[in-house]
Length: 43
View (cartoon, rainbow, N blue to C red):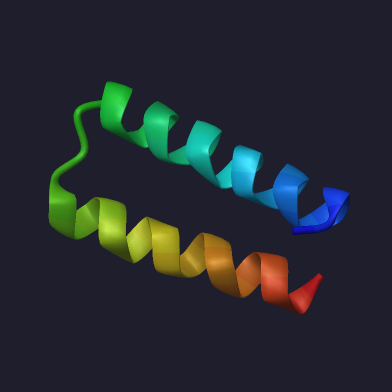
């Protein structure tokens, strides 16, 4: 895994932890995770 993809993986982990700490349900977590992936793909 190159450094760039590792950095994105770490950012995904942090974003997921933030969502979980906010008490999101699994369903909304999945929806927001999907949106995050789309945003990263567009960039």
